[in-house]
Image (cartoon, rainbow, N blue to C red):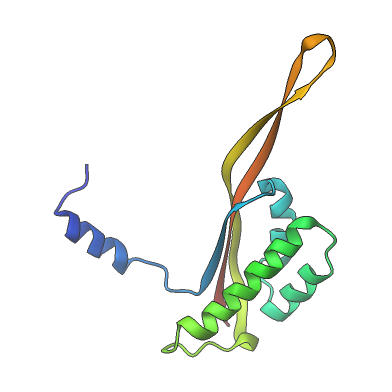
Length: 131
């Protein structure tokens, strides 16, 4: 059990909050494994290189990551006026995919059997930082 009053706990939690620009896509209809192939390719790269990689990557997840990366860049430029981020100075500090809910579907098979199909979802997060 946490110690202290609820407002005090919230205040302490908000002080430790990460202030780097980021973007998050929840409930993306792609599995974590497939999203990580694209995320591993852009981790640590500057945003111009990362955009080039995801633009010409043939995977489905790259279209989702491209849109998310553009959103993170826009968040950095517009939501942090005191830091004055420029797109040419940004790089992908962190990017990861967490497991989301799984939709369970049934595939009919021979002799009255049924196989389960699991349609997996993921939550993709991209965090940028300045060089």
